[in-house]
Image (cartoon, rainbow, N blue to C red):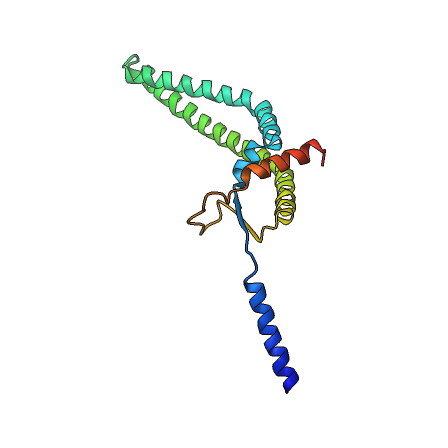
Length: 171
């Protein structure tokens, strides 16, 4: 019985010591780290190279639709021609909306594909950084429920530097 009581008392004291250990908390923004890092720039450059031309083409088509709408609104057409122009505007507007939707989905899919390896690398950088700097907990700023973050807890800039070091090292 004495051994059980002694064991219980020791266990309680050990738990109290662990409870009073220093808790070091950090926050970071995954979005900011990825955007500011060399990896993020590389992803943006690839996306720009692949989608800029199509984006410009869609922008021009949208401007052309706007011009056609202005012509229709200014009563430049009458009768059958007006009806044909309105029908053309509706058809081209539907086509443009469909093309734009496909364009946006393609960008999103490519961004997700190119971003996966970056997020995996960032996850490892966060783990390594937090272990090296004795952080107990690290939260992403976009985590629901974080209502207040004190100055000095944000380690996003440090993580950008660490992620860039990883890229330079070729990991």
